[in-house]
Image (cartoon, rainbow, N blue to C red):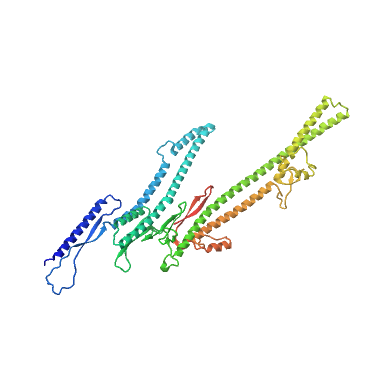
Length: 571
C-alpha cells in the first residue's frame, strides 16, 4: 500500500534527526580527542514502529513497515573488562613506582660509584693503614694513622645513618601528610560525583562528562589501593525510571591466603583512612562513619544478626587497638625509666666505691701523719730538754748556740702546727685527744683535716687510739652515720626501686599480650602474678576474639638507651 504523506515525512524527519545526532556526537568526539579522560561517545538508535491492535477491515495481505528511526540514548564506548584489568594493574604500578622512588632516595645516599669519599675507599684506606701498622706496632705514628682512618669510617657510617633516617622521615611525612589526605579526598570527590550523576539522571541527563571525571578519579584511586568498581541501576521510588549507584570495594588477601573485599564507597557514602604520627598504625572508618579496627583483618562476628560484625564489635576493637598502642608506648617509657634507674645505680655505686677508696687513702695518710707527728714531738721534747739544761747551766741566751737551739725548736713547733692542720683542720689538737673523742667529733665535717674527712665519710669516732680509728655502729654492725652508709642505703633503695620497675614492666608486657590474645590465652602466662592483677587480666577478651590476627614480635631500640624492646606488629 502507499504510505500516507505525513507518515513518509515523519520517517524522513526522524532519519535526518538521528543522522544529525550522530554527526553532533562525531563532532563532540573529535573536539575532545585531546581531553584527558574523555571517553568516546556513540548514538544508540532504535527502529520505530507504530503498533496497533487487530484491524477488523484490514487486508490479510497487508504488510506493516516501520515508521523510521529513534535516537534512544547517547552512551560511552567503554569496555568494563579493560577498566577492571587497568585498575587491578595500576595498584601494582603505583606500588612499584613508590618502591622505585624510595630505592632511588636510598641510592642517592649510598651511591658508591664515585670511589672518592666512599665507604669502599675508606675501607681500603684502613687496610692500607693496618698493613703499614702491622710490622711497626710499637710506633705511635702508625697507631694514630690507623685510629684516624677508623674514626673517618665511623663518621661515614654515622653520616649515612643520619641521611637514611632523614629519608625515612621524609617518606613517613609524605605518606602521612600527602598520601592519606589524597586518598581521603579522592573518596570524598567520587561520592560527590556519584550524587551529581544521580541528580542528572533523575532529570534525564546521562551526565557522560561527569562519568569521565569519576573514572579519572577511580583510576587515580587504583594507584593507591586495589579496588573493584561495580555499577547497579536502582529504581527511583515507584516509577520505572532508574539511576545508577556506584560501589567501590578495596581488595586484599588475609593471613590464610583468602581474598577479601571491603566497601569503601557506596553511592553517596565513603570510608576515611587515618594514620598515626609515625605511620605505624593505619585505621579507617566505614561508610557509615564507624571505626574499623584493623584494615585487612578477617573480622569475627560475635553478637550480630546472622553472624554479622556489629557496631559494638567495631567499638570494642577500636578501644582494644588504642589500648594496645598505649601499652606499647608504656613499654618503651618503662624501659627508658629502667635504663635511667640503671644509670642512677651505676652512678651511686661509683660514688660509694669512690668514698671507700677515699676513706682507705685517708687512713693511710692518717697513719703516716701520726707517725710524723710522733717524730716531731720527740724532736721538740729533745730540743726543749737542751734549752732547759742550758738555762740550768747559765748559758747566755744571746749566744749563738742558744739561739740555734731556740730557732730549731720554733721551726719544729711551726711544723707541728701544719700537721695539726693536716690532721684536724686547725692549729691546735682537740681537747682530750686521743683519750677523749668528744672534741674530736665536734670538728667541722667540711674542714680540710684528715679527721674531718674521716668523720664525714664514716661518722662518729669511738676510739681514736686504734689505727685506723673505730667508728660508731648499729645493732647489725653497720656504720651508724656518715656519707658512706648514706650512700649504701641510697644504693639499696635504688636497687629495690629497680626491681619494682622490672616487675611493673613485666606486668605491662602481660597486659599488652592480654589485650592482643585474651587474658586466659597461654601466650599471656599469668603464673606468679598478684591475685588481683591475675583476675584483672583474665577478664580481658583480647583482639583475637574479634579478628583472625597474626602477631609478629619485633625488637625495637629504645631511644636514648642501649636497650631493645619487643613490640607487636598485628596483621
